[in-house]
Image (cartoon, rainbow, N blue to C red; front, side, top):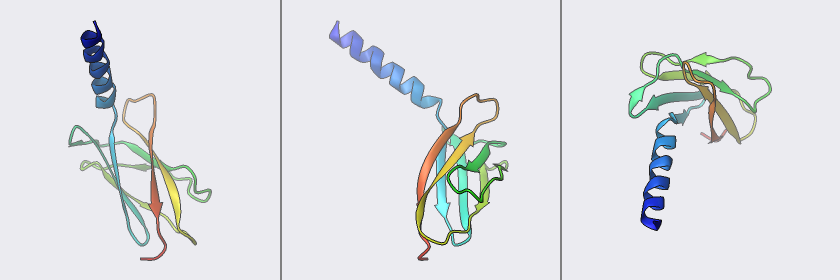
Length: 103
């Protein structure tokens, strides 16, 4: 019975993780390139926004390659929360990325 429970729980974890997007952020001097994919395929039309930088209120949309540039001006290094909403999704996904002003 324990073996069956282990298989069942493992299956649930794999299926729940399969629904999540892969969010990659590359920090640059003037902002960040955000890539959104699912299973290795880029997601076009995903909404990307920054949630913990008060002056950043714009939402950006990924292109056909699943990428978008998000301009960010920081006076000091900090962790930034990127929020992504895939097309047709009800829930958002997020990722924290540390941005350094020393480049």
